[in-house]
Length: 131
Image 1 (cartoon, rainbow, N blue to C red):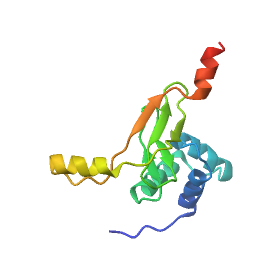
Image 2: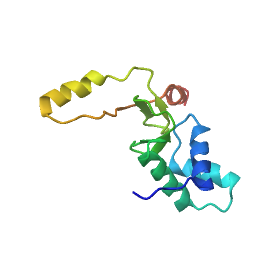
Image 3: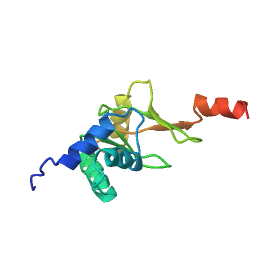
């Protein structure tokens, strides 16, 4: 496999994701990086996000409204607000025993499972109660 060099743009993208704790979309990262380097293209940001996710430096969180990125690499779950689209980490432990149970029943070698819980966040609930 060809060795990939660490470029200035890739480092800017990685730093932009690490600077946020809200699981930003590729577009949000593009805007953050563009504020630092006005010559960087959207395609460069997207390619670098995908590269970093494929190489295990970021987590690609797939949700219904837009793909998101997370600098937290441990196995964990996410919450998606179906109203405003906010994504956050779930304050529950990862259940590796589910991986083991499924492996035993199917013969698959399970690497991990990803779970996204969906509902309305407290902020959106509050807004709808007061409108």
